[in-house]
Image 1 (spheres, helix red, strand yellow):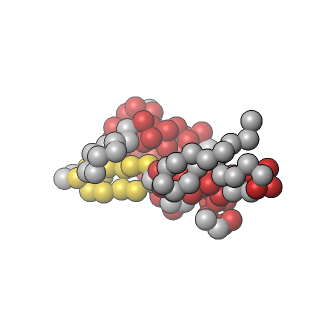
Image 2 (spheres, rainbow, N blue to C red):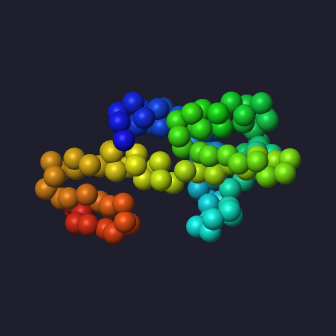
Image 3 (cartoon, one colour):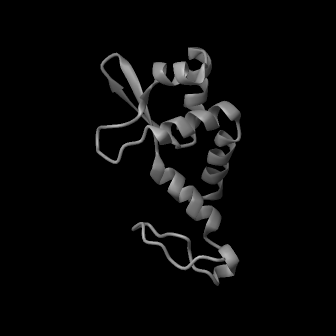
Length: 116
């Protein structure tokens, strides 16, 4: 991940409503393909956010690469992009302890040595 993408993702999450939206989408995530996610109306209702405001925040999260969307009939279903979040956390931790501790996790999901 490049610095510009990390800054965009962190900036998108540095707002209370967008952070709440992202966390709601993480809770609604499913490891099964084609499942999980939340329709925009469900997000608006759960977080008590007006539809126009929600649309603005979802656009910001999508622009930062943190959420994806897919049409499902008349609804648009949003999902957290967990690979993007993994890339962000790897970017933030890649030089931890000046390399003495290794990385916290690798792309295969295996854990490596961590700092105490």
